[in-house]
View 1 (tube, rainbow, N blue to C red):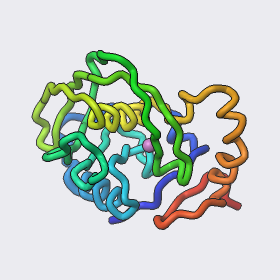
View 2 (cartoon, rainbow, N blue to C red; view 1 turned 30 degrees about the vertical axis):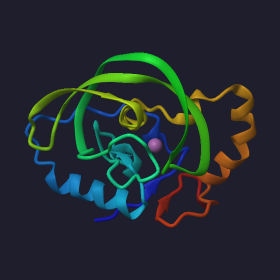
View 3 (spheres, protein in one colour; view 1 turned 45 degrees about the vertical axis):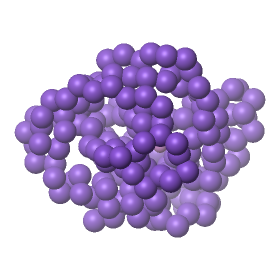
Amino acid sequence: MVYPIVMYGDPVLRKRAKEIEKASDLKPFIQDMFDTMYAAHGIGLAAPQIGKGIRLFVVDGTTLEDIEDDMTGFKKVFINPEILEENGDEWEFEEGCLSIPNIRENVARQAELKIRYFDEDWNLKTEKYDGMKARIIQHEYDHLDGKMFVDYLSPLKKRMLKGKLTDISKGDVDTEYRILAPLKK
Ligand code: NI
């Protein structure tokens, strides 16, 4: 099932998402997450973005062609993830977000991370990532803590985007996927 994607301004995107009870059968939900992400041509999607305040996100970077990093096998589900460390120099990249359509801005993030999480079969994993994979994980992980990429922008940039963000909250934005806008009348 393809869900509408929750737009900027919805409180669900600003709350700390809740831990998921171990051994829950998440398979149908995970399928919905992937279906929704692919329908919107995203490379990552966090549960709060479909209105569910739980600690789960999915990624699939395997369709990225214009990126130098090797994305082979980078189709994954992260359940109750915990970033254990972030290392390396910060680097900037223009990020976007399905909940903030048609806005892209440079965000600086650290280059490497170590993350512990459960996969879709509730196996506990600890892995290291760098480059674009790390960035995708950092962006989605932020969603579970109620954080969005625009939070990293300068006060000036934020002021400049304010009108556009308000339009997005009202549903006044062009997308090729279904959206749920909190201020839509
Ligand atoms: Ni996002």
